[in-house]
Image (cartoon, rainbow, N blue to C red):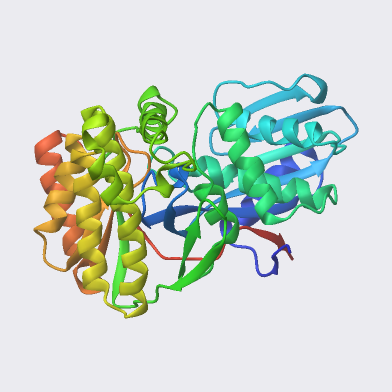
Length: 393
């Protein structure tokens, strides 16, 4: 079921429509899809575990219209970049166009007839900050194409299509979480997603006295780099070794902490640490939902600190900048929880901060970080919003 919103266009949305008409001389179908934050549950998605993301108020917009050619004409308003690609020769390319090309390529592979399109992309999801701008791009564009050509795809099918695009066209072996959260977000709720069954449950997250504050380390996390995929292979190695004792197991989700400990000596030390983190992180997600159900935000925040410690020491996907930010937050008044967010090696920390302390927290952490690393981190205060929408007058 599509979410179609009739509303007054914001300044950005009006500008996108005007820019599209300026570029292509016609009116456009406009969609939006948000970035996402993941409150807890990192790297568990591709291990068939649980995650707890939510959509945020930072969005990617896709304005599209059919054309009479057999080409995709692309324009990125934010970068003032223009490209054109023939529909019969789509292949991976460098940069943001590859996500659009991949989505169309796999729709064609599935047997759908896709005609030529004029496409304008814009938005305010920070790139490289761990908020999944690529998933938002796939989701906004996928929703638009689905509507424009009447394909009838469900949001789950669009999420899987976006994930396949990230795998095959962008070379990132990500889980389903990012696209799913962007397409299915709900205001004032997080999504407890079972990445094995794809069953999900909305968990209320309505704490008006606290804000979600992202602090950008200004270190590009280069998620498509080798280290992310290395972690995935290490987890798969652990499963492969343990399958001789548990032949029915298919992923780390199928093991308990006790089983990993029992056969610890059969695992390479590095592989053991990776597996240990995934299982304890999965357990933290389940506990966090219980704490939120009881409105115990303080206990939830403690799990965030534990998550960061595991990501840094066991999974080794943090960096000294992220460790500094999480450590500073932990010693700051009014902060209930903090951890690195996203694939790692840079990007943002996510912090739960008392509303009255937000300005002071931002000022202090920017000052301390600049003193330590000679650069000032960008800070984004966000709220949990709805997922992708088709926007109509």
